[in-house]
Amino acid sequence: MARPFKPEVLVLGLSLIALGVVWLLGNAGQLDRLATLRAWWPLTLVVWGVLELVAYALARDERRS
Amino acid sequence: MKGAKIGLLLVILAFGSTVETAWRIRNHIGPGAWGWFTGRHFDGPSFTFDAQQTEVVAASTPVEVENAFGAVNVSAGAPGEVRITLRKVVYLGAQDKARAFADRIQLQAVREGGALRVRTNRADLDHRLTGGDSEADFQTHLDVLVPPGTASFDTVRVERVAGPADIEARHGDVRATGIKGDLKLTNRHGDVTIEDVEGKATLDVQHGEVSATRVGGLVVSGAHGDVTADAVHGDFDVHTQHGAVRGVDVTGRASVETSFQGVTLEKVGGDARVHTEHGEVSLTDVTGAVDAQASFDDVSLTRIGGPATVTVSHGAVRARGLEKGARVRASGDEVVLDGFRGPVDIEAERAMVRLVPTGAIGAAVKVTATHGAIELDVPAGSRIDVQASAQSGEITTDVPGLSATQMGPGKLTATLGGGGNAVVLSTSHGDVRLRGAAAVAEKTP
Image (cartoon, rainbow over all chains, first blue to last red):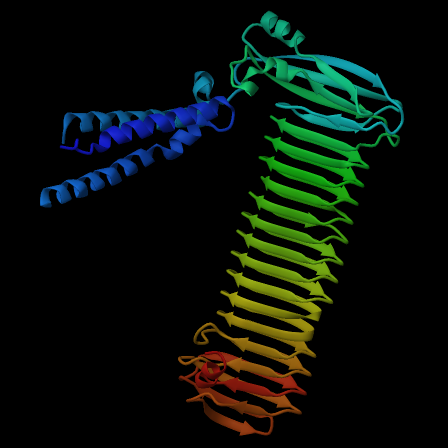
């Protein structure tokens, strides 16, 4: 049986990747870390919400089948 | 909801709250200890140290200046020498440490390829440039005095200046990029290219072309060179002669004056005022009002959000999408307003006038023409009082429902839809034609 899709794991992973990329570019002097994080952090909630809906749809399809 | 989800949600919200708090602190109190996090530098106590160096140069030796994180000022000095003053600003808490660090900042004036290159050894000290940490933040400000008259530049190149930059040059191109403050630049007989100037750029350029990209406001005065600007985050102000002007994506107002060349503006966030002699004017997507003057060429307007005022002699006026009407004074060629709302007032000499409203006529329309015909489309739903006269011409109408109250040779008084908006059409040596919705649909399906 396949493991259930857990959006929070994906959100955590993507968030860590994004945070690392922002930090890396900040160290390289390519962007303002704070301004970037301040502008984009709510996207985390949006992405999580979308993934929750996807997970719900997948679970529903699985139940039907 | 599972505990993991709640925990992650709390972590995200806490992170967001921290970022928002840091943002407010930075904007209202100052970065201080947040500098390591925000990426902002040059904060806290600092000490300033000066160094001078003089280089003897032959006449006409090209001079090139490179600097990062500091202002650059190049101006005329004594003959036969280049005098350089380096002001070092070191951000460290103790003066002795700052002095020791400043001693390591060296001015470099080297001859390469026949040119004198002026720069510092920042690359050896500022490890942030290569991704590491620096021992201290520092700025390097350069004042370079070059021989007057005898000096010429192949290229003056200024990059990544933390503060304002002031550049004077002659007989060569100038390139300035990454200026955090205002830029003041004077050049003769050379092209100027500027990019990523966060402050306002004020350029005085003659006998050279200007190209500006991503600037925080642009003022150009000069002559004999084209001006091209893209992404101006502020006002766009150009006074030149014998040069074409093109501005795209201007967030503020645009004011352009030139001659013998055309002016093209696209995506202007504020008002646009353009005046050119012997050149065409093309304005597209202007949010505010338009004031355009031209001669011996055409004026073209597309999607204008505010009222338009156009004066053109010996040229045509062609407009589409005027949202708040127009006042036009034209001679010598046709006046065509294809799609307009709001009041229209046109005086035309030796010109045909053709008007096509966007919808039902809802404001006054006044046209006075000499030696030219007048055509007005009257969409269904218009409520107008018509007064038309055509000396040495005839008046024709096929507008359904138009009720004539007075009719004679070359004169017509009529009402449509109960009236309300004055439509006064007067021409000499031309015809007047009122076209109804059916006729309009027939011609423009």
